[in-house]
Image 1 (cartoon, rainbow, N blue to C red):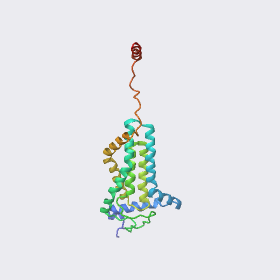
Image 2: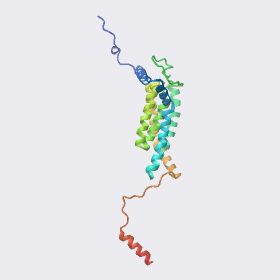
Image 3: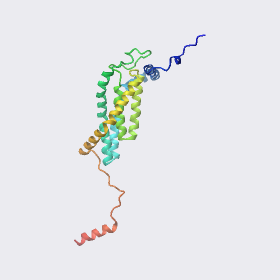
Image 4: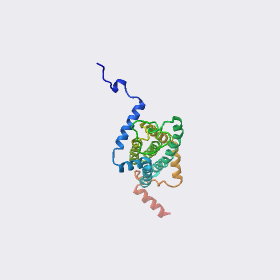
Length: 232
């Protein structure tokens, strides 16, 4: 009797097959909700999360100015100024990458079972949205761990939604995360140093608080100084 055919007999799926399989599975999950939820997720995937990340960076700036002083404030503010610059650089660097790889979008490649909710054009690898979100999130995390953790969560959500809308393969998003994070981290030290100097130069950094850990002069020294002043 002939053995029944199974997928395991053909060996593990190829990278492209696995990519498409995850795409279809996540797309089915994200698009399983009611119509109003689909519209909300489409708006979030298009620009909503990026706007939230920028607003989060602005909120972090206000928090830093009210809670940090001196060098700590300058470093955090430099990182927050670096966030949109890093995002812009990642976006610009991605243009030639897309043109070199020239990977078609899932719908354009006629991937079976794909029905994107979000209209899109251009090449697929790597995801611009994922790269910009990762650059913003990493820079905010450098500035403030609390705000940065929220930012990283939003960036991850952006990537999930881009796949869930079926406009990107999972590897497009992973590549975007890698590009954005690398831009923020590798170029960050020099850029943030310059920007920290700039915020100090512009007088945007709150003055350092006096060091209360160092003891002041003893009382007898103050009394002796007062006596000298009277004698003079």
